[in-house]
Image (cartoon, rainbow, N blue to C red; front, side, top):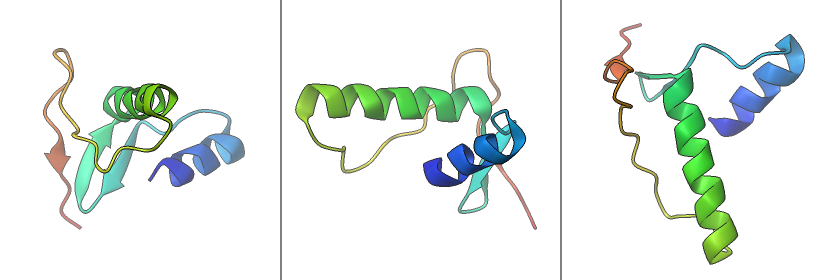
Amino acid sequence: MVDKVIEFKRLNGDLPKYAVVDGCRIHKREYIDMIERVNTFFLQMGRNPGSVDITPLEDVPVVETVLI
């Protein structure tokens, strides 16, 4: 997902408003928070985490399921 977000930014000059992972919409502030937490973990531990919990931020709505 992160690679797709970065590619979108490279092509369009700005980050997308949301990303969709396994049918779930993850809003921009939520995925930025997730990426920052992974980067912090990597800097502290020297490796990527096994998983990342996506938790809604206080002022952002809960992650939505997108039906296609």
